[in-house]
Amino acid sequence: MLPLRGVDLPTERFAATRPRDAASIILIDRSQKTPKILMGKRAAGHVFMPGVYVFPGGRRDRNDHTLPFAGDLDPLVHSSLQKRVSRPLGPAGARALALAALRELQEETGLTLHSSTGEAPDLSRLRFVARAITPPGHIRRYDARFFCVFTDETPLNIAAMRDTNELVDLSWLDMDALCSLNMAQITRSILEDVTKLMIVDPALSFENAVPFYFMRHGLAVREHL
Image 1 (cartoon, one colour):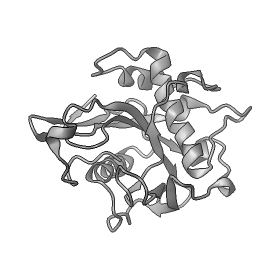
Image 2 (tube, helix red, strand yellow; image 1 turned 45 degrees about the vertical axis):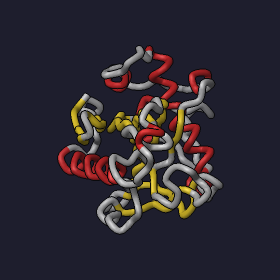
Image 3 (cartoon, helix red, strand yellow; image 1 turned 180 degrees about the vertical axis):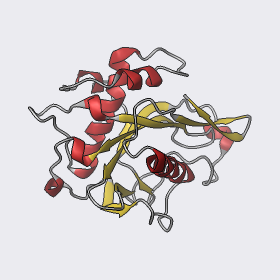
Image 4 (cartoon, helix red, strand yellow; image 1 turned 90 degrees about the vertical axis):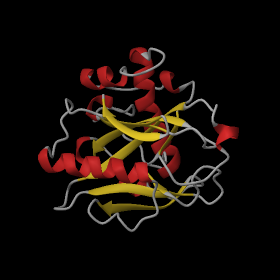
C-alpha cells in the first residue's frame, strides 16, 4: 500500500504533503497446511498505485471513532499504537484506526467481521503487525497501521466477497506464492515479516514487536515499536 521506493514523482511538489492516518487489514486463512492471505488489485482509475496488489484498507475518516464495536483492542495493541506518534491518539483514536481498517474491508471487498453475538465487530482478536509511512515525494502520503486477524477467530461470510470499484481480482493467495504479484516493496516487506513471524509464532502473539518502516535522511529505515 505504501511504497518506500518506486514511482518517480516531482519530490519538490509533494515533499510537504503531510501523512494521513490510514489502516489496512491482513486476513489470514489458516484452515489448510499453507495459510492464505486475502489481497486485491487496486482499480486502474486510482491516482495512487493503480494496478498494484494490496491488503484491503485506506484512510481513516473522521467518523470512524463513532463506529460500534463489540470488544475492544487488546491492551498491548492499544499501547503499541500510541508509540512514536506526533499527537496522542488516545484510546478512541487507536480504536478508530482498527475500525477504519474494518470499514475499508467492507467497502472494498463486501466482507464484514462480526462478533459471535451481534453485528458489531470484535476488535480483541486484531493484532497490530506493522506500521509504515509513505516517504516524501508521493502524491499521497499515509501513516498506515497494519492489523492482522485469523479468519477462524471471527465470523466471516466468505460468500459476500466481491470485486468493487476500489479492489478487483480479490483472491485468497498462498503466503509462499506471492512473489510474482505486482505489489509495492513495503507490502512485500510486511508479508515477509508476517510469514517469518508465523514460522516461530503461528498464533502471532500480541506481545510481538511491531516493525515500523519510514524514511530518515533519504534512507529507508526499519525499527520496532
